[in-house]
Amino acid sequence: MNQDILKEREKAILRYVIHQFILNATPVGSRFISKKYNLGLSPATIRNIMSDLEDMGYLNHPHTSAGRIPTDKGYRVYVDSLMDPPVLNKKMKEFIDVNFDTDFSDAEELLRITSYVLSELTNQLALVSYPKLDHAVLEKIQIVRLSSTRILVVVSIKSGIVRTITLEINAESKEEHIEAVQNYLNEKLCGLTFTEIKNTFEERMRDINKESLKPVIRVFLDSVDKIFKDNISEKAFVSGTKNILKQPEFEDHSNIQSIIELIEDQDIIIHILDTKRETDPNDVSISIGGEINDEKLSEYSMITKEYVIGDIKGTLGIMGPKRMEYSKMVAAIVYIAEQLSKELKQIA
Image (cartoon, rainbow, N blue to C red; front, side, top):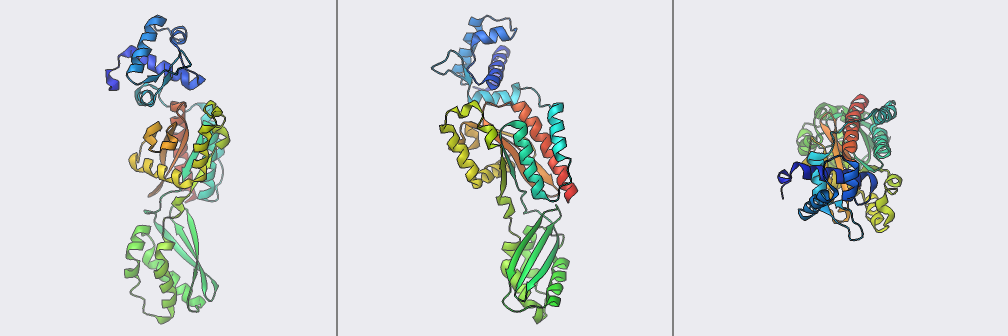
């Protein structure tokens, strides 16, 4: 049934039941709602409304309790239209600001700190992915001669991220050859995205006629996909395992297994974060239970938001039991995403 069909008092009861369940992690009864909130309704009337909400699929009734708990459908109505507006309180803001008030040396350190801050602030599992580099713009290439047949390639991206890779050359190379190739590559490639470089690299190298430079150029031709592959986005920072395991939901040890598997398999995390980024590129994404599209995570909720560094983007978010303070979580995630984007720009 569509949530718009709910009457105002049904929405109010649903909101209060979910709010109390989030706070106390125990099924909520009609008598409690009657005493806690001045609704002008008797416990019997509230009980009937809760029964109707259960029939419509918004609440569930555990067999061992007289109270009720929210369903995924109930949570969805709550986050879409019934929860309080996301507001970051002073204490949370100060905690974020203090941890970001540091001169970060590189993007990786900043992403790691972001994961820590997010987990400590929300008491959930924090997830921060590396930015996707398909649209990353090359700032410069440096080539360091390690030996006559080995070179170190340092790739600097305009976002401030630096990548290094070691390559083997089949023929001996001199320092002046390395420098000439470096100058040529910077002239031809700087300002292009990784995708543009991979797609046009061979064509751009056709002007080189000097035989002495061809062995080094050949290495780049053979390794272009490797050098400009978006492989650092295949990594994510995960924090807060100790925090999330303190939640009452994990008194049932069977719930721990799915979280442990998630932490140990970052491919799952990255896939989920990528999916959320593509689905909700500019907004906060809230996925509840089955909406995460992973059976192992059907008992959890996930909230994500993009962060931006110039033309490239990454995703951060949290995962935890569906019983979470959604408004508070959203406020924290939005502000942290803004601060992360700002700090990354300063590094760049």
